[in-house]
Image (tube, rainbow, N blue to C red; front, side, top):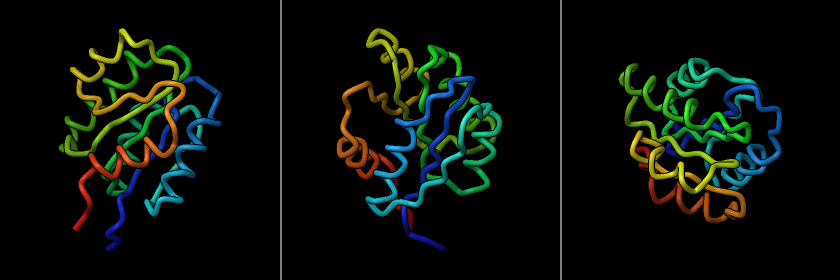
Length: 133
């Protein structure tokens, strides 16, 4: 059993822009984490299934399409329903500052907006995702 943090990086919905998600996935991998990148056009159900199957400690979501208020909470809710509410959900993309408090209230642990550095994301994940035993 690996003692590295395992992160699923996912692109939910119809958004076809994955450069940012790939940059974050690479930065987390380069920082020593195990990263599972799901690819484009994932449903919340697929993301949750992958997170559970991969025994992930965190799920990082990337949404640029404006559907973050639907997709982020749906992933959080489905993880809880499946008994995996301990998986930390964080995300980023084009997300208005006004939406961030509501996403956090709904269970999204952290939202990164454009301009966040990969180093700040890596440090946040290290500090907020439980290191496996």
